[in-house]
Image 1 (cartoon, rainbow over the protein chains, first blue to last red):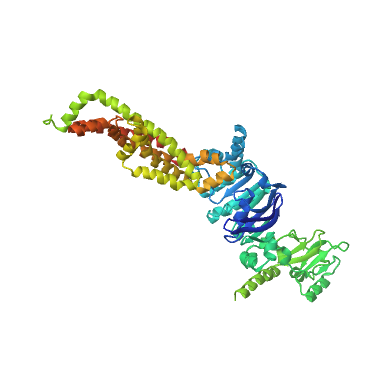
Image 2 (cartoon, chains in turn orange, blue):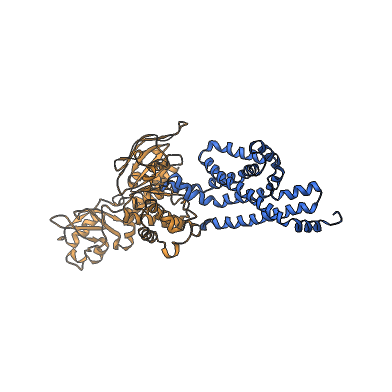
Length: 378
Length: 217
């Protein structure tokens, strides 16, 4: 765990780059530091490995004050990736990756095996790339090596300073995806600096927003989008961000709780009447004892068959398409085309229906975001 | 003697003095070798020092620059009160004269190393000395070698003036040729000196290529 307690960076001319910042980064968290240029986000990150020494307060890693550690020793145990990559041009790719293990005095076989493993991990064939020099690689390939090099001695903490900022959008996207899948396996504590909100939302477990050396808000992406702490945060994330990121909208925000439930012993005629009165196009059938979801009846099918069936059970569907209440709006959007009659029940842990998503509720929820946006622009 | 053209004079002198030429060339090479040796060691050292202590940069580069502006013959003269007449004075003066290109190129070579490479090196936990030895110096080598080559070539030419303070070398023939009015004798000093400069130039070009790290070529 990394802990900042009243940490400031004041330069000799009195300029406060970072102003009494407090936060904790739990083990295994991917924290994104974001903010406009000059906000102190890079400085905050670089204080962790003492590339920039802090002037006040305490930074500790796993309870140890970093100023008590030898800076070189500290840095060898923290992975470091920078935007300009900084591979050694006079070292082969293999040697570049082996730098930290060599500094740590690992034996040759262990280093060789590790280098190979890392190259494979970042999708570069060791046979092809191992003996090449950095200038023979594309920018994207070079930064893959940069990431491999930072991971070489298996540090628990990884610092990344706008690592994908200089890459073209397609390569950037690929490397972001790769980093996400790497992090799923490795569970490092990552501090990632960016000025790109999309990148922050995509990668971060939590996002820390900084401005003028102050920490404005530190929260999960969902929380930041839904409850921005100030108008600055709101403006910084951009008004339309939430519609562009339906994966960050909880499914409960696009469903309706207006659900009409019934029991299985209902006659078809009564069911039709019920739907007409309640102005709904589907009935949710639940278990009479514990109200668990059993199935779904669609008004369209019922109208067609109302005279030919005895029990509603005959036309009841047991939809394979349901969502849990922890799902996101994106899950609902992705599922919708495969769902007959366009109704997705949303179930809680006890399998009770908490609401339904229909094409109508989706459209209403998403378009309300747009109309809000338009209203603000006017 | 005046009936002979310059080439005939040169051939005649060469035939008469070839053993002296070899001896003088050997002295000349020694002057260049020892002055360069000291200049390389001190020049690279000072070059590294001023990248680490910025306050000294102006003083050192300025000082070496002033040395360069002193006419070479005058510099040789200034050295006489300190080292007397002879080889030591010549080596001291030639050394001072060769210093600037080496210091300047070492300094620029290290300063020109990509900042990101140095930042990455520090960020990975290299000590300042490791950064210097493993990153900065290897990457500055082509530049440093170019400085050494420039200094060596200038040095060979300037070393001919050492004859004026009694240090010997190929300058002896030039000096003698001028005082006696024998053009061929001047050539007898000038041609081996020029050849020496060309050989050094070629030698250092190869050395530069050979010492340049693979990934930079």
